Length: 163
Figure 1 (cartoon, one colour):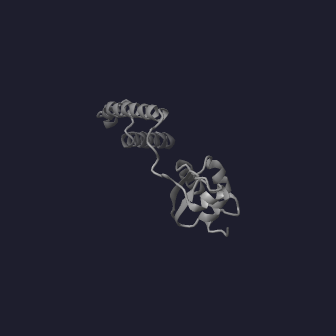
Figure 2 (tube, rainbow, N blue to C red):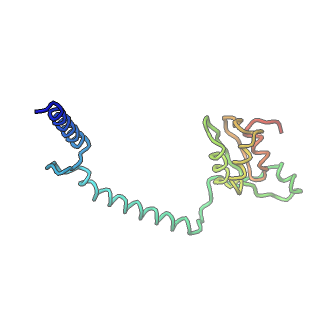
């Protein structure tokens, strides 16, 4: 036999062995009899969980569409300063405590303010906080903010900038 034929036969045996090892390692069915995959057993269980989650999502969407009679946890409060601004007439302003923690992003701050009813548009606040004047200046702490404050006033308060 020629040396090249023996070498080719050896390489072929090596490649077949490597393919069989990979098939066994990654549980690939390449025509060899193998045990049933445990993933096939879990498909039905996972499908049931998915259906249940979809039902819960639909239920929550229905609840969100219906007007809620409950009020938010942040109750409206008025202060003497607000009464002076409005000329003595009582002003309804929503007040909340805003918690700023390490690593918080302007997006999260704006979302918290919008969810608390302090601002109407979180995108405006996020863009203001991304402004170079306030960027990377959020100060850790707890701040009392209310809906009568302007976006600029809130930004100055939570970044520690001079008013």
